[in-house]
Length: 121
Image (cartoon, rainbow, N blue to C red; front, side, top):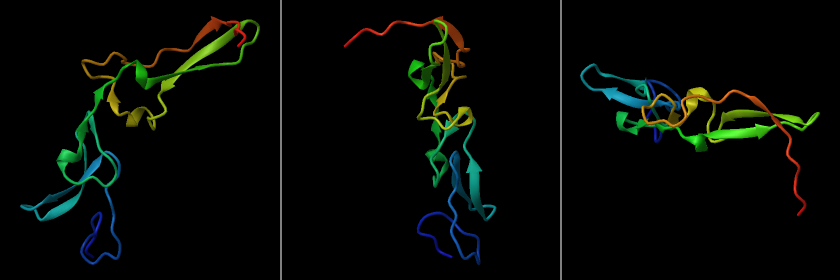
């Protein structure tokens, strides 16, 4: 089936697209086609076509981390850290913590701090 977007096997009745971090590739010599994973340290959007669709992940920095504070209890609160909301999980970061220029290599461990009084206004 001819596909406007995606690909299909001969005789298929539907089209498929490659998933996130994959790209569609045709090997003319072997007469094969299908989805291939992006190289380690790179990523792509769903439906990507061609190896050039895979983009090298940038180094991580402080903007890639969200900080959350628990409710204050007995004058203390817990600070926890997670990858920023634009990430779908550690396996799907658009930055590479292992990149030689990354300022953030891993998430800080949770910590306990004293509660601060809020100012009026």
